[in-house]
Length: 308
Image 1 (cartoon, one colour):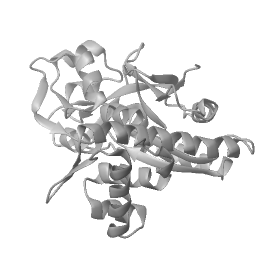
Image 2: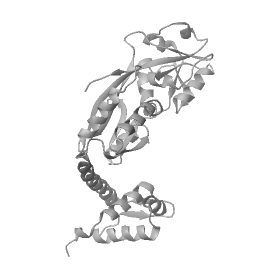
Image 3: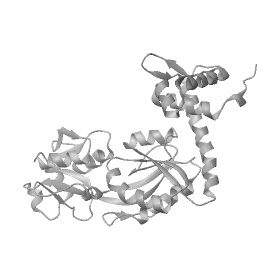
Image 4: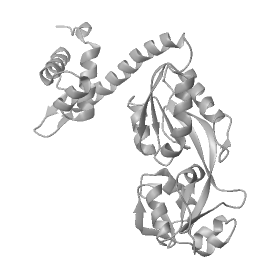
């Protein structure tokens, strides 16, 4: 008997995605604002229509089967395209309308969002931003799984199927204890880092890899202290445990003072390049590029704008 694919509904696809994301029928039902029996019935109906089991049901965790994982990935792409239809229709009214799911790395989010989001909302009142903060690797996964539309990250990002556009170059600044020898200088050199005890973020943060590229991975790197935020690094520096690198935009909120000083590098100063990445298949590339230009045009003086 041939399979009646016309019986599949978008609601069923949305429900199976929610179950895959949460690993739990109850939490998936809460996310979809329906009762658990309603969601479970619809998921079971889809399984019967397809003639396959989508999930392995256990007491504590619901896990997609191998076939279920592939079907969920297709479901995400289908819903992405359906949403794109609405975006294209709204696009006739102007750019940057509807929902935009935007990821951003933790070492950028607290320092960039304050000067990006308020003017963006004012200029594009029909745009609804859904923001997600995570590491670059996690954001790339979210992009490829169609859970995000774009992400603000440090370039380059090596991942198949993604496009990117540079926004600005952000210099690094050295944070040092106030009594440290490097604190006595007005500017420091990259080679100074190789003989300086450096405190770095934990694995998974791209800023750690960029710092290691500058100061090397020898004895000067303090592996006994690994922080998950720039504010924690600043506190460790203030306690006299070593120096660290921070991106220039972070100076706006990471207070220095009597225990910590910030010192710029001699030219050419080391930096990271911030850009926006998205799937090449994303249907509203013009909207992404409009967002890129919006951010680039409002970048503060602490960074150097980069044209695409």
